[in-house]
Length: 431
Image (cartoon, rainbow, N blue to C red; front, side, top):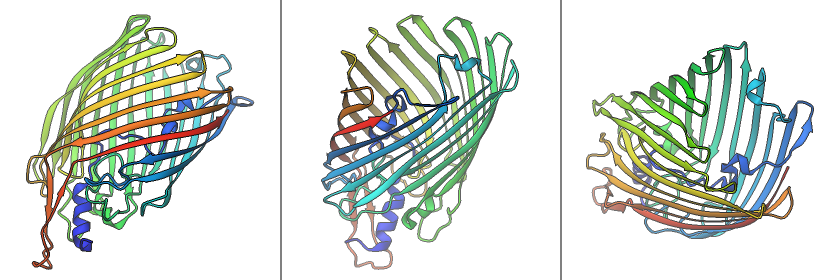
């Protein structure tokens, strides 16, 4: 067992925010809302979509440690969504559209200290068209995540798990303007973000943000448009001066990009964009870089589709002031006989962490995420689901800590690399 102070520093130092992709471990098929819904229950102008699923699984590295703990897992995932009824009506021609929903995952680990916990995902969106030219939208998202699965939260947590439960709230709105014919569109928006880590070990990472956005687009072909978007984000840590932890650095981040989105043929689409992003931090370890996105979408037939993409992005991080990512993605899906859906995906992400007081050495990671999932629908409301996934972080980086209060305590050296295999089998019912 490490001393509490050493564990505190280890946990706070190794947490990273939005720098690598999440495997949606706690949500499973709920991560794709299109797959959760059936015909629904008609309630006048609205549709109600309830559902529940139950799965059993196996995880080779519950805490994403360099030496992992494995466990059998039980996951139960209910959901309930309410939305404006489609009813064959073009939603863009309506004056009001509304959608809200809540989903949850109860996860129980049979063979680790993680035991049982509950994640939550809730969102709501209201769109109101005030006239042919002016529209207003309001949006809210609340998420409670419980898994240390999206980044290397604590590489040595295979021996000492820490509380990684996290609440994230985003509330905002957008004022939209468009020409009478709808070819020219634009808007401005604002979002308040609150990121709260429930455990005291991560108290220094609690933060808030204020983001102002602007966007516009011009549709010059039936299915093709030029677009521009930009954002200004003020990011602040609420407990950045907590004792025994190096100071967190507030920042101001800006980004802007232009691009084109459209279709070359009825089956082949694309997105191309490029721009600029910069982060200005309190410790003067600032950052600026080109950002870009390239995506190709190919619907090979009515029942099969393939997507290939590359994205360069820059995000705030808890280890280092920021993380620059270069991500390559591929995803394919096919429907067989109208009842069996098969999906495969792969992501390769190269991550370069920026410097701060805690990260004095260069750290470069390569993050690999692959998945294969299938669903067989016995009826319009009942299905069998299966999923396998593999995650690996390749890096030579190691964490080195000692206990200043006790110089006789041996130095702790921890590798940041990890890997995990997971498999799930279950059923779900939905309307």
